[in-house]
Amino acid sequence: MVVRRLRRLGRVLAATTATAVRRGVPVRAHASEGPMVVGLRRPTIVVPHALLDATPSEIFDAVLRHEQAHVRHRDGVLALAMALLCALAWPLVPVWIAVARVRLLMELRADAAAVRTCEAPIVRGYRRLLLDLAQQRWPAHVLAPGLDPVAALRARLAAMASRPGAPWPLQLAFVGPLAITLLVLSLIHISEPTRPY
Image 1 (cartoon, helix red, strand yellow):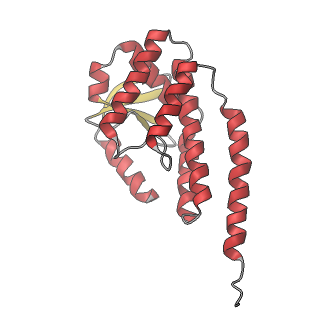
Image 2 (cartoon, rainbow, N blue to C red):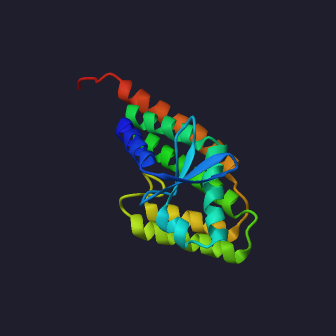
Image 3 (tube, rainbow, N blue to C red):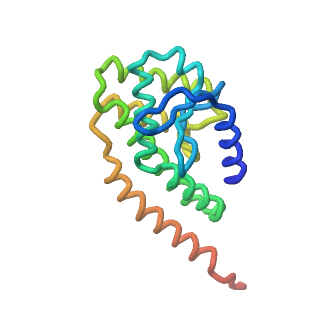
């Protein structure tokens, strides 16, 4: 599954055209895929042509700030590590729940970076864009795999509406030990010998 996804992303990147470089990160346009970051060693932001052509510049800048936040925090490396963890521990439901929560926190952090300096009308436009993208792509793309995508979207929109900043370090500090505890308990349960009765 992980290898198949990496190959698909490679094909997506091969079908893009260069548009610009923003803060050292290349931005490329695709017929339908994006917005997303592709690549670990040389991250590239991929945006769909429709978004590039029809989105007001201030809102498009917020989209780019969101993707640049993923690059800055090396979220691609973390996402790959979590995908490998899910592949190795696929029968362990707690692992999937913890991974989905961390992915949502990554999106919340990137959203906070996208709208941190924006005026209220730009924030509203960015939120509307998220809704539009969600309506176009469900169920093929989910905002936080493993979670109900509607709940994930609501969490993102609510966080931007309140704009308190991104409390992700505190939440990650909670999710990390919880995920490790659940993983250890699951492994202990699986490794227990079966006793005849």
